[in-house]
Each structure stands twice: as C-alpha cells, then as structure tokens.
Image (cartoon, rainbow, N blue to C red; front, side):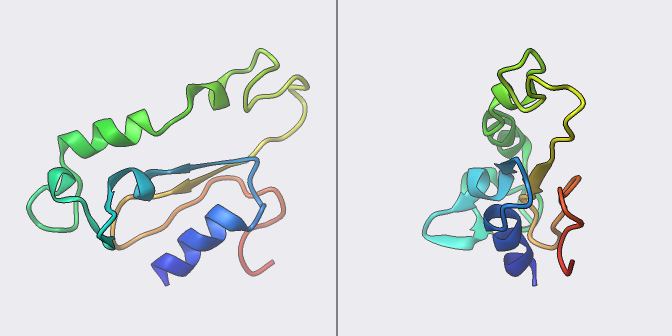
Length: 103
C-alpha cells in the first residue's frame, strides 16, 4: 500500500510540486530499504545523516513567494506540495489540489 500511495503522490499530477524524501534516502540496490548509511539501526527509522539528505532534497526555490517559486506570482492561487516520506511504514501528503486519492 505504501508504495502505491507514494507512486500516486509522485505521478498523479495532483500536486504543483513533490518533495521525494524516500528517493533521497532509499537504497538504489533495494528501493524498499533505507540506504545503510542512513539507517538508524532498526532498518526502519532514519538517522541524523538521512535527515540531512532529506533536507538537501528540498529545492528551496519551491518555497519562495517572490513570484518565482512554489508560492507563485499570484499569492491568491492555492498551491499544493506532495511529500513522499522516507519511512517504511507510512505515507503522507499535503494539500492535494483536487481532493486527493479516491476522489
């Protein structure tokens, strides 16, 4: 279910932008697992290095409100941002444009 939700967040077009924390910390050899360098030791939760990798995955231009970023030139226009979480057990998203999954 987690992978289906994450795929939907990435590809549905429901969001103006997506920040993919999972891609930032997953093991390319086994995308269902956290890269060993980012594993806290329980194979589930991220360590401090993974939080840095997730922070580095955020394109700060998305958060600008000067007309060039995610906030857009027209501040009255509602923007949405999808988040693909890095954890192995949950998926979250924020403010889908049209009601989210199962619309």
